[in-house]
Each structure stands twice: as C-alpha cells, then as structure tokens.
Amino acid sequence: MFKWSCRVTKAIGILVALVALASCQSYVDTTHPPALTVFAAASLQPPFDNIARQAKVDARFNYAGTQTLTAQLTPGAQADVFASADTAHMKTVQDAGLLTGPSKIFAHNRLEIAVEKGNPKGIHTLADLARPGLVVVLADPSVPAGKYAQQALAKAHVKVHPASLEPQVTGVLSKVSLGEADAGIVYVSDIVTSGKIDGVEVPDDDNVVADYSIASLSHRSAADQFIAFVLSSQGQAILVNAGFEKA
Image (tube, rainbow, N blue to C red; front, top):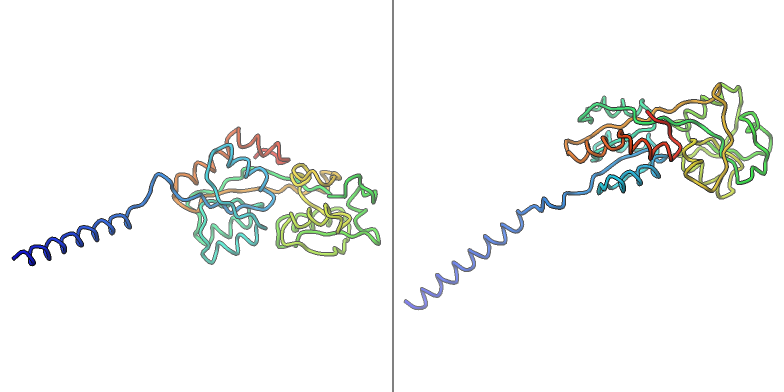
C-alpha cells in the first residue's frame, strides 16, 4: 500500500512539472515586443536612425537600394514599414498586395554632384562630367538615384561613360569619398550628411526631384506610430536637417 501511494505521489509530481513547463513554453512576453522591421532606401539612414532615437522606437533597419528592398519584399520578406526613394517601387509593392495602409509622400530630395573635398578636378557643371580622363561613377539606372541621374544628364544633353554603376547611391558616395572616383551624382542629403565630400549644385532646369514615400506592411500599432512620427513636425525637421525637403 505504501509503495503504491509513493508511485501515485511521484506520478502526480511529474504531471504537475510537465504542466508547469508547458505553461512556461506557451507564455509570450508582451512587455518586450519584437523590434519594428523597417525597409528603407539607403539614403535615409542618417535621418531614420535619428528618428528612431528621437521617437524611442526599437527598430531594426534594412537599408539598401529601393529596387533591392522591393525585390526582397515581393517574394515574401517580412517587414513592418517600407520607405522608398520613389513612388514607382512603392506601387510595385502595393500591386503585390503587401501594403496594410495607404502610402504617403513624406519627403523630397534633389540631385547634386559629389566631388572630392576642395573639388581638385574643378567640376562645376554636369557637362564637366563628360571630360576625358575624369572617373565618374553613378548609381545603376534600376536604383531611383541612378534613374534620376540619367534623367538629369539627358536634360542637360550630357553623355557620361561611368566607370561603374553602383547598386545603391551610398556606393557612389563611398567611391568619391575614398578617392576611387573623381565625381558622381548623388542626393543633396548625401552631401549634407556625409561630411567627407563636397557638393556641386545642379541647376533646377537640369535637376530631378525625388518623391520619397512610406507605408505600413503590417497591422502593428508601432508601424503606424513610426510613420506618424516621420510625418510629424519633429520628424520633418530631422529630415530637413539631413538635407531633405518637406513633403
């Protein structure tokens, strides 16, 4: 009788332990939700990092060329927010049925010629980029910055033979700042936030204005809050300080 009682007690103890373990495994810590995943155009890194700090948002950013982000999202990459350097790629993501809210234009950007500090090659216009012996790099035309650069050169009637076509605008910036290229076409915001290169203004008649758009890709309230901060006066001020123009 004593042995049977011990066995029953032991069995009950094991059962209680298993139930407790199952409860622990099924518990979800809602006090620490997962980080917000934001897919954003590479040119947005300086202001978006600042916005996340100011808004006190726990965000995990994926910065890349807009075309790369679109190519990741449409097959199924998971994200909460998408910020594009143009409206065309945003439409592609929208047409794929991935948006959970309307897209909104939140900033504008313009083009500028990136040159080495002090402008040692004496580059003053888009036409100068066609000079023989000058090493010029551009973003690939599949990237918004590359597409805009091609449009600006066409408006100025300038033919450039780039030494390389970079997969994102930060690649152009990097090659000029490292002395691997004499010049390139980037955004005004890249010049403002880099601090490693100088910029040569592109006149309005030849320039192209980039429209940056943003949208939520999930139903998380944090995604809507992040977008709301970007559109707020505080978020807009951060973007302007980084060289962007208000929406």
